[in-house]
Image (cartoon, rainbow, N blue to C red; front, top):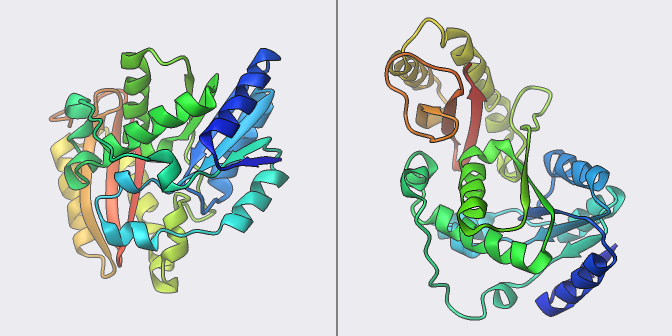
Length: 279
C-alpha cells in the first residue's frame, strides 16, 4: 500500500496508472475509520483495478470549532485497516497542502443546501463541495463511493458532479449499522456508555415512523416523532423532517413514494444523524 501526503506525488502516480488503463475507485474519508468505511472500500476494491482512500479532516466543513478539535483521529489504526482491506493508495494531506491559500470558492446548490443539515450547519456543504471537487481533481477516479447515512451530502455531491460535468461516477452505498441498529459513525466513538446504550432509540423510532407513514400525513408523523423524543430523558431531537429523496424538499400532506425521514439527534454533546426511506 502506497502512502502519499503531497498532491504532486499522488497526481503523478495516478496519471501513470491511468496510462496503463487501470480503473480507479475512490473513497474519501476523514479518518477514524469503522466497518462502514471498510464496506465502501471493499466495494471499490471489487469494482476497480486500483482503490484510493483519502484521510483528511476538512476544517472548512466544520461550523463548530470544538467539533473539529474533538473529531476522533487514529491514523495508525486507519492505515492498518485500509491495508487489510486491500487498498492500493492512501492520500493523507495536511491542511496547508490542501489549502495553501484562503478558500474563497462558493457554490450555490439552491434549496438542496439550505434545508435540514444546511439550516443547522451553515457553510457546511460549501466546505464539502470544495474539498470533494479538489480531491476528485487530484485522484481523478472513475468511481467514487459515498455512504447514504450522509444522504443530503450525497445529493449535493451528485449535483456538483452533474453541474460541473466532472468525469466521475458517484456510487451510493447503504447505511452500515451496528447490531442494535445505530448507524455507524466516527462520532460514535465519543459517546459515553450511557449515551451509547440510549442511541439505538433513534433507529427504532425511524422504523416505527416507516410503519406509521401510510396512515399519517407528513405533519402528523413529524409531530409524533417530536413527541416521542420529548419523553426521552437522554436524547434531544434537533429535527425530524419528511422530505422527498431527490429534491430534499419537505413533504406536506400525504407521504409519497421516495419520501424519507431525516433526523438529527444530540446524545449529550455528540450529534448523530440518520435517515430511512418511508415508502
